Image (tube, rainbow, N blue to C red; front, side, top):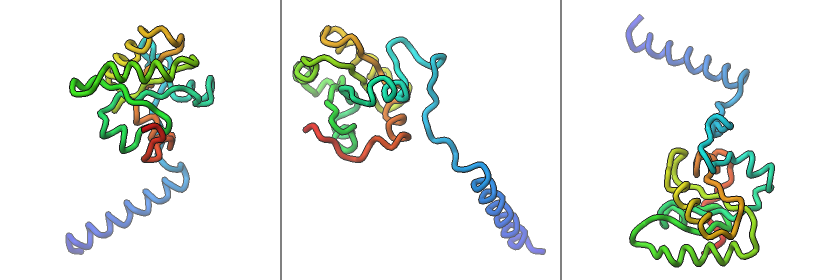
Length: 155
């Protein structure tokens, strides 16, 4: 048996084993793990957002403008810490949306992204909402849940 034949045999056996495993166990878990032991102060799991408020929150995207424009959460507003952006405009936009009150969830690029926690703190300082959280898992949690569609509603 040649090396090429041996490699082809191993590849076929591996493919069959992977296919059988997929059929028996199912697809891999793609969600973002989240639980009380993983949360930092003022952080929340996506499951909690959906359970408490059915996702009806003011979503604030703390990523760069281009990322928000590409696939921001529908209905979200932008508030990032980019020095080239107008911080006062972000604050005014958030305040206008928060006049009615309601919960706020800030998300950023990664689960470990500290920008969402910083923006959440700025929102808390506006004192227009009691419920202001950073989303644990960031945009990854939203993507895993199929909640990002590639376009947003708010300009």
